[in-house]
Image (cartoon, rainbow, N blue to C red; front, top):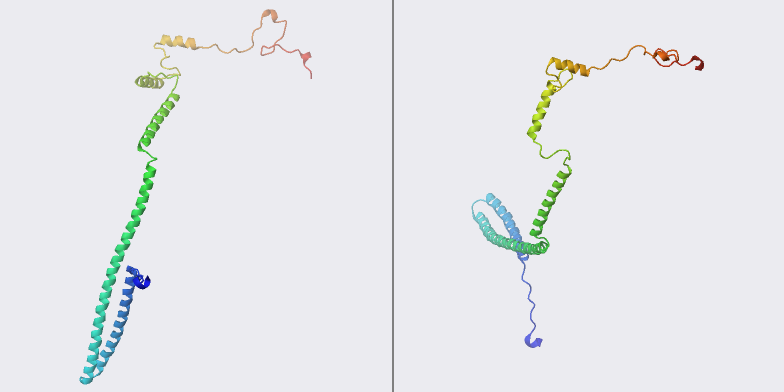
Length: 238
């Protein structure tokens, strides 16, 4: 069968952009080396033209210099063409790398989008709103409980603050007008009332001297200078 139909030749894969760019750069380096050699040769002919006199010898040097100059110009054209090709390949390579990066980015975004969709199924905005509402209700109930526990039992709720402020001002005025330790509301309005108040507030004086003993008991028992029963001397032991 192989003799009849032959064998299919294996085709080589097309070169990549990087391979083509490397090959062109190598050719460009070769051409650049040739140009440098021609520059050295032209410099040598230039020195010979300075040293030779006008005549057949100088014309021969000029002819050789013109030939080298033509080769240099040809190589420079090839070098510029190769550099242009390299530039185009670099542009294509840059665009290809950008597309590859875009593909990887799209793949990563698709994977992340799929994961986000899976996570969003477990989290619902309505559940979050309901939870926030419940938290607000619980905080309100907690504040009401704290206010109820902190309420004073002896203070009525219907107290007028303006009335309290008036009483406080009156109390301060009374404290300013206090005389001889007696508040203004206890001070009498007339002198007769003041005398009566002094009589009511007067206290009996403390007793002084020896207390008088009853007559019937004067001989029965002796008393000391403080009016207490005296202790018999026979009962005192040294």
